Amino acid sequence: MSAKVYLLPQELTIYEVGDVHRELIAIIESDHLVQLDASEVEELDTAGFQLLLWFSKFSKHYHKFPPFSSLSPSVSDYIQMLHLENDLYSGDIEPLGETS
Image 1: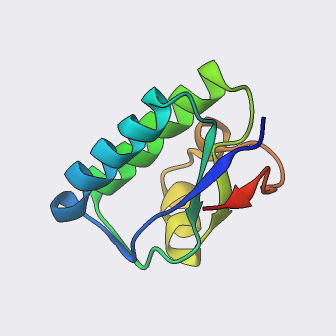
Image 2: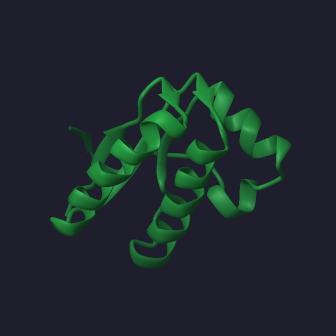
């Protein structure tokens, strides 16, 4: 089964997180594997980061593959600043499926 790749918006803040969370839940409930493409995220706040952390833990627990197909410099810097590299991804980030 190939993974769907969900493109995150440029702004992942408290104003967008609710909509993104609902869309991710709908994809997950439709029994699809999904990875997040965070390559276009330019603005991130703690609500957005909590969403990334939730999805990362969910993905690792249920899907056993990396949760992200790619990261923007903003997201990568945020992860490194908080020293959460091991919690959010391990090793190289490689896409698993087709972008949809």
